Image (cartoon, protein in one colour):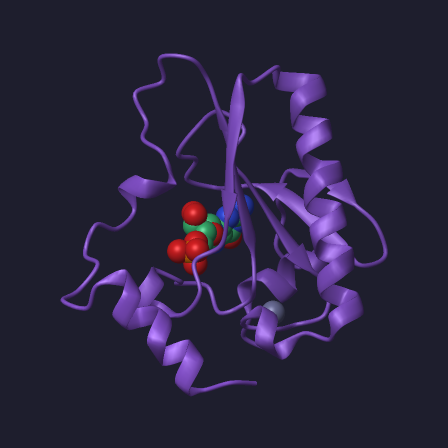
Amino acid sequence: MDSCIFCKIITKEITAHIIYEDKDSLAFLDIKPHSKGHTVVIPKKHAVTPFDLDEKSFQELLLDVKKTMERLRDVLYPDGFNVGWNQNTAAGQIVPHLHVHIFPRYNGDGGGSMHSIIKNPGKMNVDAVARLFDKKKK
Ligand code: 5GP
Ligand code: ZN
């Protein structure tokens, strides 16, 4: 995909501070970090979401997320991590190339947990939501 900014980082047309790379994935420091060492890990195959990626490539990506976390641990000594991705604009995705955010966390850094992303469970209670799954068996 010509216009994809992350594909251009893969081909090195755009520079980035790369902290991990192998044949499947690339991990580089986010240009606007939300914590010290905020990193994004991307598959080298262009995909917008995991639903566009074959199973093996997604497995490799997740393994490379772990390897990148180990690299961050060994260099920055964080006290914890939040890890995840924004999927589609509803969830805040801006760059349309799948990227897993790794936020190294430090005691007393003032940030919240994953739970602080959204607090809007809607009107259905948990039992009602569970019944939707019963109705639509695989
Ligand atoms: P999204 O909201 O799509 O999940 O996040 C995209 C992330 O990519 C943002 O955190 C943003 O700062 C980062 N980003 C966007 N363009 C560039 C770039 O050219 N270089 C780097 N290193 N990070 C970028
Ligand atoms: Zn791309």
